[in-house]
Length: 591
Image 1 (cartoon, rainbow, N blue to C red):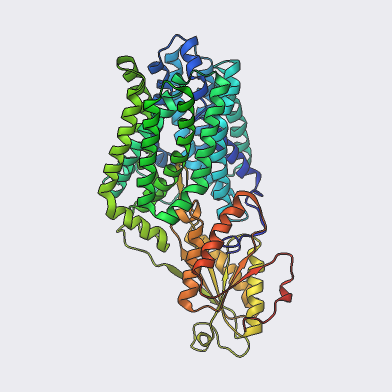
Image 2 (cartoon, rainbow, N blue to C red):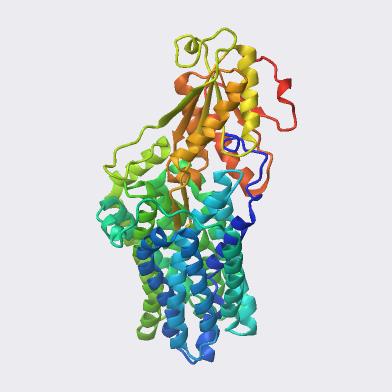
């Protein structure tokens, strides 16, 4: 495709204002994960609350988020994505401000619960709204969402530390102000989206847990989240640091979470596979939590281990989420809600349990239990070998799953035949066209794709070969959110537009939509390159035409992943279209 592999000259960060309004809200929302860490000791001291009472800030927030995840599909399918988003933002604004104005720990805990409802509504719909509002490429919207997620996780603790150094109320009021800005921008800039054809039932996420693979992955995630939020929710107390110092510690942690979620996890999964990556990652995380348990009262070791834990948290978040979306035939938003419900329950209960265990035993015990739950998670995961192997096959092959029976859908969807005979050849679909190896033009929905099509047309005129237009239909899974991604109709429409361009040049052509899985739209961008290469190999292509990766930053790195996989798997020439060079300069080197 012009952006995958190879990339387009259109940056994914050149988006409408509506996309940036929602992306800004995403940054602030994800700040909430680590925002309160730096102020936990201060709240405990100033409100005369025990650590176990203060950890209820995590428990009320996450447990209510977990339960609310079950109703998000029901709500959004009835009032629409935009109004669900606005409802979530409004709840966050109100309850974060009320938490900042609270006189005691009990009120803060209660208002954090209301914040959790808003957070669930927001998370469940923000990705879908960004995709629907984005321009210049579907994948660019996913990259922007991932960038917002990583920035929020990394910046949250730092903002919490800076504002918390002034007053423990500062982070709560800061979130309220930022979310109010985001809510106004969303209301003004984001257009209402049409209601889905099918309304989601209230019990569908719970019914989805009947699938053994989804249930096993969710229970594994519950064990992992128990350890994760034991570290996140209780480790600040024995560190003995001020708010700013704690902010820097957890910012270091957040940067590692973000980097390994976006870049490290896809590389590890491609190199070692899902199962081995998860087993090794959970085992290494267990060792890290065990180090925390042994040296809890030694701040330098504790601080270093907490920061390093960000590596394993980032890897696990991405690989597990991708596996959950392909391990069962359940629709992705429903699977995401079911998975989020189970895993957030574990994350919510762990900090409070840690505080109670310290009160009745000692400060080391919660972390020993956290390491033990990770070992239990490995044991649970080992019962799902068949499901993990199935998920690996689905992600590697690029074959989507049907929601009804779990039967594989066709890998390629024929779109149309376009063009009239060129250089004496009959139209595609007849025997004459098949006598010459075709040219493959890999396109996406960005404006730069027209140059790829034009280059393919020029080569077709020079060599008398037909053109196969291919477009990889991509799904969307990022962080805690899942969306159905690009519809098959939208993908077909993209191909048809380029078929018209070839028809105008009297070039015989046929269009294909390659049906991708959830992971190919977000973290595993290399899968798109593999899909294009495999299709080209199957039809015996002479050359694959792709766009040049001229944009920089995160997007260029992800497009490079697709380009590398294309180069590794393709058995023909690859032509990269230079956006600075005229298409007419192409020579007939592939004739």
